[in-house]
Image (cartoon, rainbow, N blue to C red; front, side, top):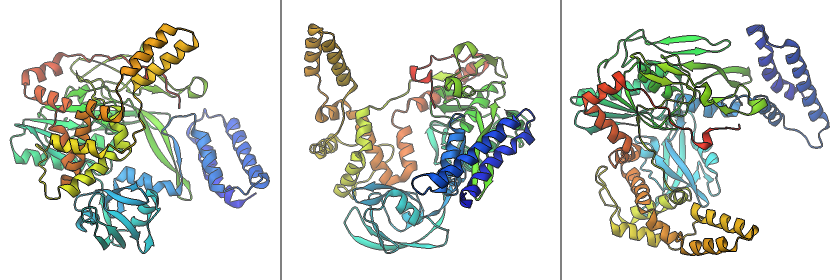
Length: 564
């Protein structure tokens, strides 16, 4: 048998073999039998498959098969994947500091980070990469261009770039740096005395970033209330969440526990709070998950903050990494976490995934808990806000324009037409003439879009035809004829949200990512507006935290059953 296959397979199998030492109830015979079958299968594939087999692909396939019916968070990480995993957990990498995207035959800069090597070299959004270290970049994928530009901090990479604004071709040698993607990309003021901090992930050091942001606001002015924005924060390192909670609750407070077969821990705050009495509002939505839910849920359970927005994602599972040898790892779920009221907010039950498929926790099994002050809260499906707001959905048509690159393409055009136009983050708006120019820009563009209404009418006509309902077919045909959802009509129908996307893209080019955040929160952000209202009303704030129970919202149809 191919020794390389054995070397790759054994660490994965031995990781499983070690489990009996940790749990006496493990089926030793079953585990040994399964290991023997796996090795035999690998041997037969290696010796007899019609074509030569890549052992790395075999082991990756075997590993994927082992975890496929467990949960979506348990996975095998190959040596190549560990680089991306490290970036996710640390938020740091060696490179030039910019997002990139494919446009036509070339890769272009999509978002240089402020003060990164790319930014300091004068590279801007839309600048085209013609060559990297002497290699013609025509036809490079995003992954290939990224791999060539990343490297050890202190090393150099030479780029040949065609600048968007004037078409000038320039050669720039950039010294790579340790790029730190900020976990706290923005902090500022949204009203008199009301601070706002957006916290986007839970990578290493995000507590330090958040504390610096909050202390910076407190030093700037009279901080009488604070909004912590955890919308779209998918979580990360649990210990960072515990340290962040220590900023606001008494030292020694138990804020989360983990319970599993081998992973049982209690986490308490280890430092005195810096702002123990400051009124807090926390923003959450359906993409708030994991460590972000720990912070939001613990503050709710301790009656320390008013939660505003929509029900959070509901990820109450803890992952750990275990080395398998040869620079490979297994990331596996080892426990569930429980917040101070005792509730677990995991929304999907994976324990019977093999027999029944993964299922949302049924309403009949959802239990009631109490916050520190006696308010009712519930388990089984994320954090329910104290103040619900309706989510703002963007149309499929607007998202289609964005996905096809038309928003960014027009941003390029706008910059070329208005290279000296000043853009103030809080007041910038496209004029009617600007939007008319965008409509002209789109006049020769093909947008593969069909509205939900038109699709429904087509389905109705087909059903009516199949069942010989001629009158219904004629009525649906008449309605379809009246429906205007061509590109030109949709550009008018969805004008407000398309215009907002265009404005955000232009703001990004002048004021980086933090400028877009400031633009968003000052242009009719419903959750921010509601949070400001409650923080400016001490009586209402206190009433919610003293007496208001949370309300269980109805599940959407797509949340009922989840097949993984």
